[in-house]
Amino acid sequence: MTQEVSIDLSLVIPVYNEEENIPYLYPSVKQALDKPGLSYEVIVVDDGSSDGTLAQLEKVHREDPRWVVLSLRRNFGQTAALSAGFDHARGEIIITLDGDLQNDPEDIPKLLELIKDYDVVSGWRAKRQDPFLSRRLPSMIANWMISTVTGVKLHDYGCTLKAYRREVVKNLRLYGEMHRFIPAIASWMGVSVAEVKTSHRPRRFGRSKYGVSRTLRVILDLITVKFLLSFSTKPIQAFGLLGLISGGLGVLISLYLTILKLFYGQSIGGRPLLLMGVLLILLGVQLVVMGLLGEMLVRVYHEAQSKPIYMVKKVLRHGEGSPER
Ligand code: UDP
Ligand code: MG
Image (cartoon, rainbow, N blue to C red; front, side):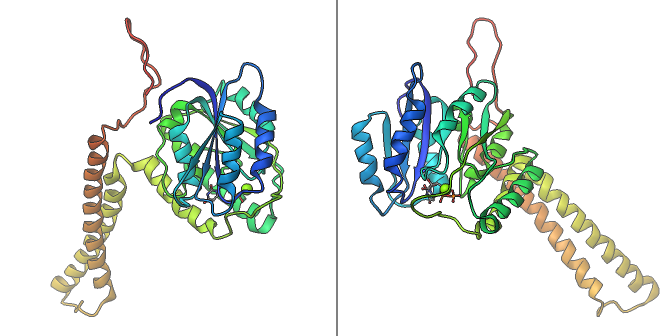
């Protein structure tokens, strides 16, 4: 997308109606990162703010050319904003950060130290400064569920402060509200993930953009992530199996009823079991067909866009470098 220039670090910061926070964000990032030997850029993504956020960002941009401002046409949501930032990031390491000052840029050097040995480093707000009932409790449940279901065990999926190697981010495709699941999604690539405790501050200005309602949505997203991780290249294995079980049960039930009718002369027309058997057979056929459709979709998805179904870490071969992919 953008021309490739090598920079050590890209900070990606999504902001939506955070005008009071920007004037504090700039100096705190500067203080944490202005160190000799570290080249960095900051990609702030204005996610369609309706307050003075963009004007504030333009001011910062005039002052410091390392601040790249990306202004989205409307509010697309945090995932889209992050995704836009990733597309424009040129750093070898990419670190995401909230723009509301709840994350502390002073933690960034810690992440930079760890990312030397890992592909993803996730912040963990060990002393989270948010209300317990409405935010911390749902988030504890969500973290436990995501960790258990995806097998990528993290204490704090919701923490935006995370560091990624460039190749991880460049191979990610994010949709919906999936930014919370990046470590789990990236686990498909075989990444190594580390966790580091970071500080967390209460929000001073502006309001949180989320409420309790996101708990339910996390469950739906989790189902999607789990399905994609386990079956995205073999949908028939998921749907087909369910279909066979359902269809098989249906056939057994129907067989039983047929025997009753033919050999024992019983009337089966009024039995609920008959309905059940027919339903299960229909469902089974549907599920298998759905799996087959899925198989065709997988082929279209991967072949139309030449997307491989694997990720190579490096290639050792005489006479050639090792391209990353
Ligand atoms: N944000 C965004 N687009 C949105 C919602 C949020 O860019 O549609 C930004 C927001 O400005 C903040 C970050 O994402 O910088 C995290 O949002 P918030 O602080 O509201 O979430 P919380 O910390 O309460 O989980
Ligand atoms: Mg916040």
